[in-house]
View 1 (cartoon, one colour):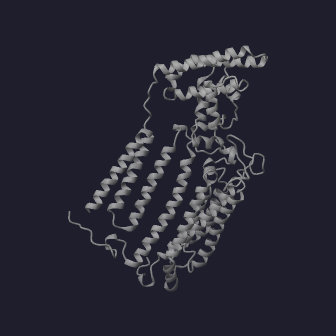
View 2: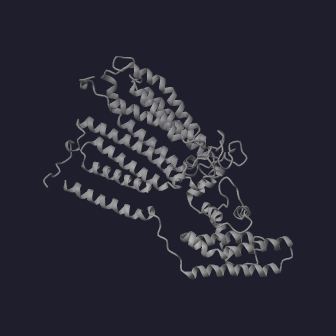
View 3: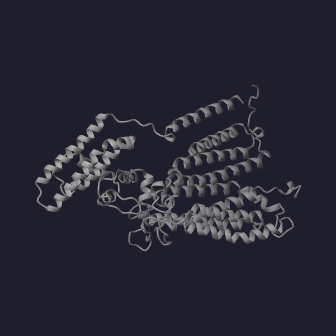
Length: 398
Length: 124
């Protein structure tokens, strides 16, 4: 008893420690205003860039380039004047935001002039953003830098900070934002969760399928003796026998096909609507549970389990084969999802989607769906039959 | 504030799960307690991955209302929880199998009466 209480207290301490360590993430971050020196520094940076551009313009003869650079100079100036405002508005994020604006402006300004600005802050920012691989378009609107400026300066008067900030927030470089923004383009799947499960983290899903497979195998092995013994002696309940209510039996017969169809719908439309292989497979397996409750698999579960295990192994094999099919690039590469191929017709943004989009995702989803359905069904059938009372133990049937 | 309620629920779920694991004697109840902890962890991840306030939408673009990209909840925690649910189901089934075998061998599910378990000192 003492040991248990001591371990309980220890675990409580661990839990409390975890909670305290998580608390800063949950609560809103405390805002620290940067010192005035930083603001001045950034104002100076902007000043310096404006001066550099001003001197660079003098050496250019092309009219369009000159107007382009002058336009950018005015943008930089208006941005410079608003730096204190940004500080009060976006406090904690102001620093990153400056970098972003500077990089954004710099990338546009300096593209035609690169070479003359070695060592410039803007060039450095530009390089940082180039290397970080940020794709400068929010979802649904493939935007280049130029378009971002068109969007941001739509009112023709100045940079609208809110819009740039929105674009900036959209481009903040986290994994989930990347998935949300590029998932449709790269995998063709409208359901980003499915694209994460079957494309970005497909190897993880393969491991998951393997875990399920191993669990099913070990359950079958562990229950082998018990199932063999049960098969011999006991009196089974039969469908349409007085033991099982007819209401239950007929309802199960009526509902089973509907459940299977709904599960199959979830599996096949996994890349378009909420659902996917795991969810659909679990729904289909609930049909098996219903059949078991109604005692429609009564006498011998061996054949059922054999057939199901064949399909389970087949599904896992299909998954691995699909992985090797894209081996020219990488294991589990989505080789069917090419921009103009037959399997990737999904448009950016919100749309109705297409059943043939998303490349190998529907195939993997189908394989996983079959595997989950068969695996959980084997588990259910085995446990159901193994937990039946032995022959001598049946005392009260009611 | 809604988040705080979720986190308190997570703490309660994990607390009750730990309590049941340590103080319950029935094997089935211990398995259920492990599931309870799993549910708490799943809820924790989902709550961490939620964003967008009241406008938060599922990360699915099929017939999505408008460009709600900025308020879509994070997809990766949901994918992880999908993994966790299936693996939790598999491990639960395995543990229940062990419970069945234990019952076959000992004719009891009380962990104090299992063969080979020595008497734990009960004197305080």
